[in-house]
Length: 169
Image 1 (tube, rainbow, N blue to C red):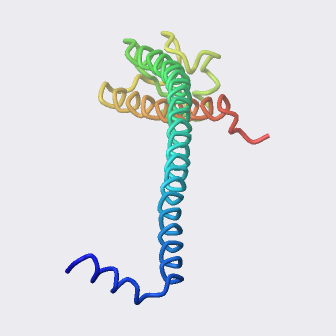
Image 2: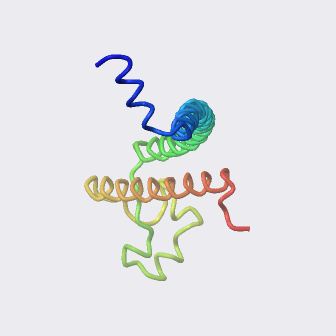
């Protein structure tokens, strides 16, 4: 095709169609250029929101670590108090003295109670009652240890509740 043929072909279309075509091309170009700006603004806003969320999460993690360290210290102090208390109970139970039954347990009744002195529950030489057998002594001491351990755990839990402000008013 020659230029004359192309010019003749283009001459068939009225000029106002070219103006509409040019206007549509300009609108499309502006739309594409504006969409890029809007997309950049959108991406910037999304990135800022993500950065703010990441900063908030990091701050919360640091706060959680601080709270965890505080709670670990409180827990260690409570556990130390419980361990010290239980160490004392265990030391008392390991002492060589054996447990005694008072005169009321020995079937002496009121007569035995009348002759017993104020030290009937002690391990004094003249105390009423009898010494437990080694097996029974060990079993009773084991039960005392278990009861003291449970009570010590309960006291430690109460201390934790009080120290953390969870006790009822």
